[in-house]
Length: 300
Ligand SMILES: [Zn+2]
Image 1 (cartoon, rainbow, N blue to C red):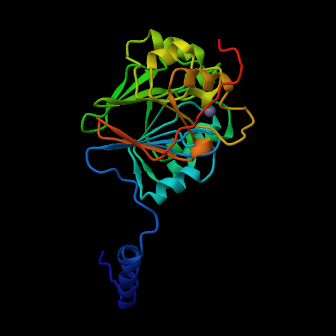
Image 2 (tube, protein in one colour):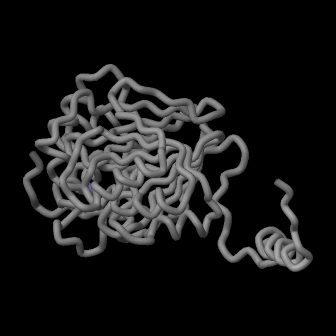
Image 3 (spheres, rainbow, N blue to C red):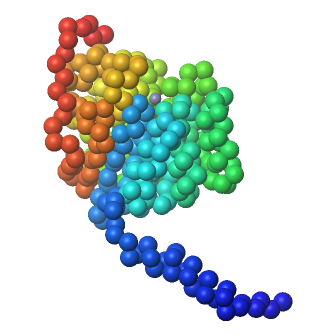
């Protein structure tokens, strides 16, 4: 069969091509591009209010760990940064303050792979998230302790937890990762609490890290003294919303961190926190850490 393209169709096609390819190039760039310079690693702790969303830009992979609550915060951040494709999306566990915002990401960006603990949750948000992974035929991996990924130029990601997650306590099903680049490392604890921390401490991997993304928004249920001692971070990042209903971060956690001499950065006070590293040194976009003055409380 011969396709006959009439003159008016030709004009329409040319007009469409101009609209698609030429015009956008002429428009001024409003948002800064989120692209690290060659050979660097950038970790963005995106302020999404009460929830987690961490963008990792490694030399050869873009990884998004969680997406905050349902809504546009994360997708807007990614779009403003010119990100169109995510190599790996990790949903640490099925709570809505972690996977909610991933729904828009799965819908609007090209996502190559989703990794999560493989635990089912009976919420509409979780159902929508699963449906999208299925409909878009996105490769899916159940994350388990011991898995590793190479993210380019020597940047590695290890999964430290869970080994055998249970649906009975979703926070303790959290995927916990450690990203290492040369001398600098990031321990990203999801919403892990005490029992997860104990399991991780019994595991093989070294917990020693430069930066600790504090578990469960700084709840007293996590960041036990033993875990903190093993991680021995220089920097703690706490992701939580201003005046959140849970009272996160809890006084006990802040006291443990400040007594251990860790510099604390908080998304509820500093907004989005971006740490960039060349594997030797690191830079933080926030000038002053939060100074905690411990109240007179018992620290277990
Ligand atoms: Zn959470």
